[in-house]
Amino acid sequence: MRTALVTGSTAGFGKAIAESLARAGHKIIITGRRTERLVELQEKLQKVTEVHMLSFDVREEKAVKAAIESLPSDWRNIDVLVNNAGLALGKASIEDGLSTDWDQMMDTNVKGLMYVTQAAIPFLKNSENAHIVNIGSIAGTEVYPGGNAYCASKHAVNAISQALRIELLPYQIRVSQIRPGLAETEFSLVRFKGDREKANAVYEDYIALSAEDIARTVEFVLDSPKHVCINDIEITPTAQANAHFLHKNR
Ligand code: NDP
Ligand code: 8X3
Image (tube, rainbow, N blue to C red):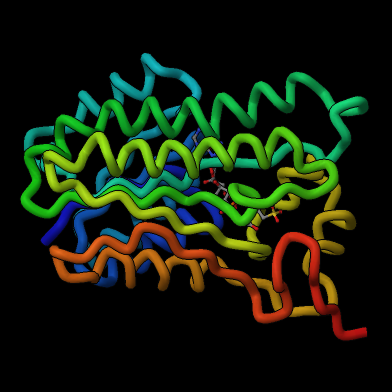
């Protein structure tokens, strides 16, 4: 039985990943800022596996370290780290954008991922079957109008994934990146700061990916034999060719 820590398990991909890994028999460490959602998820998942909950903001380096170091002895054998917590804020040009949005995206998607990874590496090194899965994006290899800072943050995740694969090679810790396209979660509601009409419009007239599609992909990556590392998977809805071509049925 492997122990998996999933960042951003209170919604979207992270919640679906925690649920599917729990069903597959992993012990799960669920994390996020919204404690009430973590409590709810813990109650649900406890019916199928052992669950430990850590509430922290990935942007706060000290809080990240303190939370991971606070793990009780029977939870310190982390085998799997899923770096999923992240967000986009706004979709404006650099000329019109808010620097506070850029800060939050960089602090969360880039530095937060690095803080969590740094704190988890000593535990992963003790595992016989360690695996890091980073949730990147097609925005990590493409750029679209208004995507500037978000795309830059996901390009950084792409670079960090490759760097980690080199750095952790001597320890045989696998590093995989999954780069989804359009997926219907709370992502757009967060990006458009609660504007439900704008958020819903993103997913109109085609079938977007679901959080479960991404959870299934994470499971596939983690289920590979130990001598196989799936380095990178790009996954889009059938209706989406890339960041620029989307086929809408209307
Ligand atoms: P959601 O908004 O549904 O979920 C985001 C999760 O990230 C929440 O659990 C949230 O938890 C957590 N999170 C955000 N900021 C922080 C923070 N500062 N500290 C701790 N946790 C945080 O979005 P998705 O599930 O769609 O997004 C998950 C990942 O997938 C992100 O990295 C996103 O960039 C990426 N992605 C999303 C795509 C999409 O189209 N949906 C496509 C490609 C990639 P809480 O608020 O409780 O802290
Ligand atoms: C989320 C997908 O295309 O909105 O990473 O950037 S996209």
